[in-house]
Image: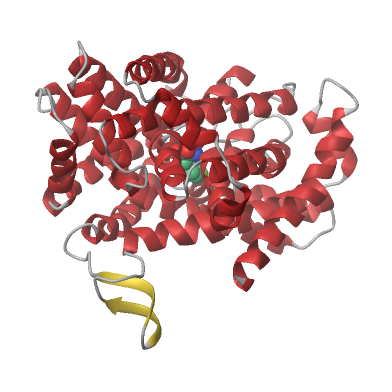
Length: 467
Ligand code: PFF
Ligand code: NA
């Protein structure tokens, strides 16, 4: 049942808690692990430029849209969209957009949990002093040994999901605030420590050049990747921000709040990139190192500075915590929906959904070892294949799920959310919910929401299809 001021799942004590929760959702592996390695794979500057444009023109407006829908609907994304659609005389089928978002969130969680598990393994490694004096080759070998071992990966994947499920089962409103209040500032401080180390490598300029020097000719390659990543990093297109919006107090201004979150996320990603690439260059490694980049380069830094093992330990603990606060937000839309729908306990619903994610996540675990030669989307000399056993080309299961979610499902979900807020809900409702401080801002943001974001996503999609 829709209600103006409360949701059955609880309410944040103030808008600050929403900022903490939404920042907790946004800041995660996407910033520290994925952004640097994607910038590496797509050649740096051009990718970063497109990424920043997508954040400002598409990502943040859609984040605003989601928050508006959530707070107005006061339920899980599926039910919020259904009831708001009915209220505006539109089709209840709009809720399918939120349903797709829910599935996207669970798919992302399935592999996110595996990668977050790596950071758990590195916590132990740092604690044991395994990285003292390590060089590029040694760090690469250690990472290779981890991903080659399905049992070790399974252990950490299971542990990560178990803790995520435990937090969600207790409810996101309880307990989240206290931990995030301490952890998020600590993450910033440790990133600055790393940045300080990068300055001492003598390659800081090379790092900056790689990240910010762009060549227009390189732009087309990474456009879709950059857009997909803008969605991923802001957690939009899933309904995570929407469901957190549903727990936001009535009086808070959505506009200022959401922009703060977008800004914090961007600052963390850029700082991570600036800290990481100088270390990559100093170690003589390749910037295009792929998913292992952070797990190979950072240990080199930590293994070779005074108190490095201690900083390293803290750092990987914080990466794990940042991943947890993101992971819970992927699970919440589905859990809230199932609780509303079935009336069953949160604990039971969470257990079942987390178990599903665990099973799908095992596909990612095995895609690094046992199933490394199982490839999807392969095109080779004798044509195009959806699936093939091969060592050449195509995508592993992990790459495929990442590709489907980031490149297709997130942008599609975000597009539908923006169109819903921009064209279905009505101008006065959106204006009242956003409650922007300066009157001139509303027309700009409303235009981004109604026109720029949907058109932008569509153009990038079409361009990709024609490629
Ligand atoms: N924004 C998170 C990150 O950058 O790590 C990832 C994420 C969280 C994606 C929540 C999607 C989501 F719904
Ligand atoms: Na992020």
